[in-house]
Amino acid sequence: MELTHRPVISSTGLFTPEESISNAELVDSFNRYVEHFNADNATAIEAGEVEALQASSVEFIEKASGIKSRHVMAKGPVLDIETMAPRWPERTNDEISILAEIGVKAALDALQRAGRDPGDVDAVLCAASNMQRPYPAMAIEIQQALGIDGFGFDMNVACSSATFGVQTAADYIRAGNAKSVLVVSPEITSGHLNWRDRDSHFIFGDVATAVLVEDAAIAPAGHWDILGTKLKTVFSNNIRNNFGFLNRAHPETADGADKLFVQEGRKVFKEVVPMVAQMIVDEAERLSIDPHGLRRLWLHQANTGMNRLIAHRVLGHEASEDESPTVLDTYGNTSSAGSIIAFHLHSEDLQPGDTGIICSFGAGYSAGTVFVRKAG
Image 1 (cartoon, rainbow, N blue to C red):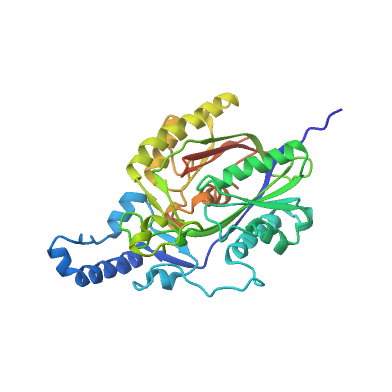
Image 2: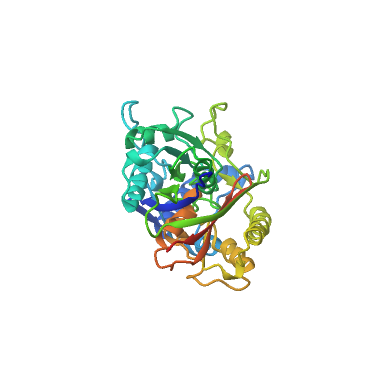
């Protein structure tokens, strides 16, 4: 008789940096930079050669995004108007990389919650939007630090990386190639953000998450059955970052402006919302799930307006905070980690049989859905 391997989510883990930046602190720093810039370029601005910068405000940020604060790995340098970028001492090749370090912390949290030892894990997937280096893979460094005898590799699908990683891990389980897989998403997004850009300087925060995907045969009680997954990509330039080893422009110089995060926010909103909402509804129908009956939606934490509209289209009514919880207000946009944070912090109260969806979407465009049901 052929064995059937059924993937489930056994646990999740979370690492949150100690330091946090409020909107008031961020606006104070940004506006001091604007004041200095406009003063230094007063003559050119008056001559029409340089465009004066506009000040930001707490009201503008909260209306545009719903974000009130964000955690970061290096608060001081981000708020210093001479730097306005994260900075920390460079580590030697014999020291653990900062991205791997926070990934390990999230992974250990997930393992502890599932009662697992690193020796029980077969593979590590590092799924995040920005890797610290091309190679050795961050996943392999995390694997080494945890003491896992198996394999690991990196994958980058921007804000959808974690859900793409979960489907990849689930496929390994289904095929019998692994029984336990860690999907780790360390996101130091403060490094790719242009803190001098009024339209985006408030968006991102730093964090790390982990998802332990395992064969149901070994999963702990209270796990989450994976009912189905769906991935989708559609090429778009509306969210882009051009930094890489083939270009040499420093991302903080004028000629390197597009080497940091850039987006056409209105176009993204208009194009992504209907795509994601329809993707969820179609996949629910394929799985014989009534989308209106979903107990909870753990959506990508990018913009409150996007989430409100997607949830409304899926549920058929305005979603309550209980139905579609928000972590965006205190974490900011943490790229691939956002939907996992929401799931991690807002899932323990659900009852056996309750069904929900973890959904992420972002640059690419990319979108991933993971339908789950609380096991008895």
